[in-house]
Amino acid sequence: AMGGPPRAPFSERTSAVWVSSAGCVTPLHFDLCHGLLSQLHGHKRVLLIAPEHSRSLYRDTGVGVNVNTSPVDLPRWLFGRGADADRHRELFPQVRSVVGEVYECVLGPGDTLYTPPFWWHHVTTLGCDPGGGGGAGEMDGGTCSSVSLLLAFDPTAEESAHPCVDDD
Image (cartoon, rainbow, N blue to C red; front, side, top):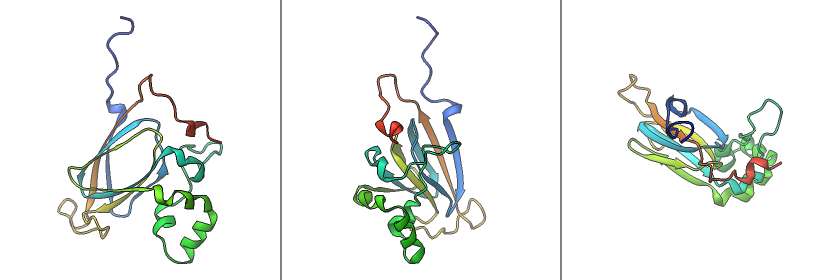
């Protein structure tokens, strides 16, 4: 056998601990790898959209920009009220076609979410209160933190890249 033992699917390189407070956001994006997000403390809301809808999500294509991201503020587009939200919807009208295709998941302590490669996702830290109110937490003197563990692993050689990575 050439090259020694197979590479382990998980390593320090593909693992992370996320500590955030209520209101922190990871903008709409997709990853090229599989991901397991385990919630250890507090709550997070994850909005997911299948890669088939990439054309409607205004994927960034500029030079020097992470091309796996979108400028769409998905919660504002879906749930926002008032003139600011209306302007956002006017700026990104194609998002309307995916409204019924958005999956929402609220993670609490002990929950794990699997995110397949190329699935778009937007993450909002809700704090200790799954309703998004923040809530008081014993971890940080009253302002509840969220603590999550991310384990990411690369697709196997048998898995093909999704067409969304070539989507212009």
